[in-house]
Image 1 (spheres, one colour):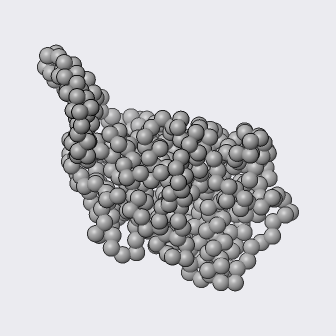
Image 2 (tube, one colour):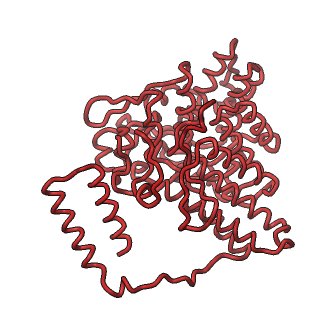
Image 3 (tube, rainbow, N blue to C red):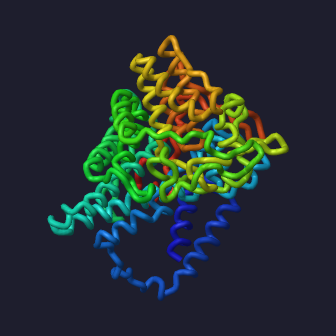
Length: 479
């Protein structure tokens, strides 16, 4: 009943805010209000909250929370629909089950309508779990807190909180810029487990500072190796720091973290060892958990939506960009008899979409940052070390570049091809669109005319879900 009343309130406020008053809506409001009142029986109103909640207190309790992969190892995926990796036709869109999917694809002003956001809730649940653990550790004795297991738990909680804040910022905050981030809206930085605490949005600088602080603090606490890759390690923290700093356009720092992570393990999976054909639908990668392959550092999968199972098609431009001897073509994709191209393979090794951290991303970060520093030889060496493992044995010719601009163009093209459907393209677009040389205009078409998304559009930032605005009163993003 509480859920019904909450949704009723959201709907009523939505109607009022949008001034959608007509005879139908007025009648509907009256009916809903009567249903809500009728459903509020006396026993419901008299019920008191149950305070006898089970609070995790031991290291084993904390580890069980962290090992809940269905909560802690999920990343946003809705932005896949807003980017340029896939396209859909009217028939595909018609069978998507949520308004958020359809609205995202056409860059509508409203995304979630009167619904909540699965991704917002998923990330803040990770933050909530992390805060419970961090506060629980503080209640332990100094001796217990000093044990290696407690340090690992604390480092893991800091890592997961940082990752959740970062992932939220890629969708619900404006793109990070070289300057002016103090004047841009960031996230509500929930640093306590108190669900009743009202936290307003920090600025964008403070949001990224919190991410960097949590990750930096986790480095000295996390283990060098883990038994299952759903658990963060030192290399995972280094890899995420490299990714975050790349997003912030702090290329020297991103290069340093990428080099540190690769210095511990620089393994790459040779795609010649995988069995794959363009007509096979089987995922050729080893199963990602518990250990996957040596290239994978940390395992994440994407939040599931109906569009994953309903004929989302690979953009033909990117598909044609893979050379005939490029094994990624048959490893990543399946070519249907209809001519339609779909995704089949990812480092997840299952039907899920991999969104974790792996060495191929770090090689590309190294290559891009070296190119931006003008170190062409180092940049191309990093790129070639990766690509030789992606091409049929004996067919790959090392790429060369005469200028930094030429090197960067090659590297960014390969970044798009290598990290396909990894949940990184949206962040890349937001970053690269700030430079006229690398900005792009996106085009989608549903059932009507072609629509465009301009590089500096406010729609590169998703709106905060309406139920969160109503519950907390935080500021909404302009659209």
